[in-house]
Image 1 (cartoon, rainbow, N blue to C red):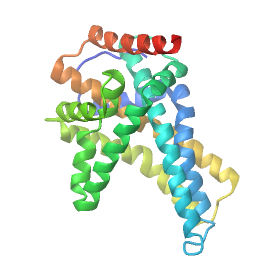
Image 2 (cartoon, helix red, strand yellow; image 1 turned 135 degrees about the vertical axis):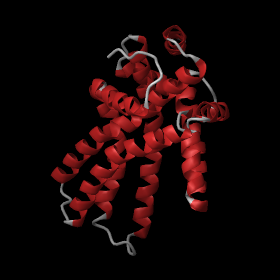
Image 3 (cartoon, helix red, strand yellow; image 1 turned 45 degrees about the vertical axis):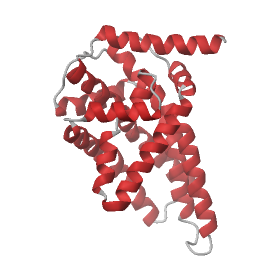
Image 4 (cartoon, rainbow, N blue to C red; image 1 turned 120 degrees about the vertical axis):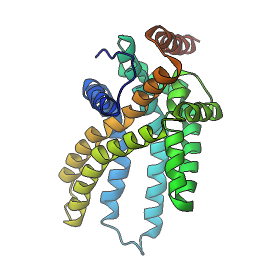
Length: 257
């Protein structure tokens, strides 16, 4: 899928997010499955446990799911960023190439996720609104880590700078994508658990639906990142191609060494 670099309206951003999700579904669906499985398994398993007697086991499951998510999410984020970037440059990017980028940038991405998550969590505990502000400000920080080879602090400052003046657009895109891709599957999961339908078949069916619906939320930050750079920095295909090519060369040199 070839995507032209130009400023887009809010509706166009939403449409492009879902178009790219469909175009790269086969590549990103396995990663989305891995991302969705731990939390869903925990939800199904907890339904069979006593909140008081099995409090220790529930806590261990929650921590285990969090650790798995922290390990997998940077790989999925980096792969999706690289794959989506290829749509703008008109090149091809396999899942393996995307994962190679994720492995190379694993630690700074993990640090970025933890730092942003901490700020969002603390802001949410304070008065909720600061958490939303932090989430909006640092929404495209992972893209800067991958495409611009930035560290944790630099990527967060970069995201804040890009989002300044456009935070409402970013916030409403987050809201729309969240409502469309998380609330609906979440309601379905809640109904299954409430009715006591917690068998293997129900788990697998729910996992497939949740993973499919989650793909736009993985892709959306990259779509926003490119739109902001076009608007604020006149990003063109040549500049983007240089960024993407440099990522590939760096990965290749590392693998050769």
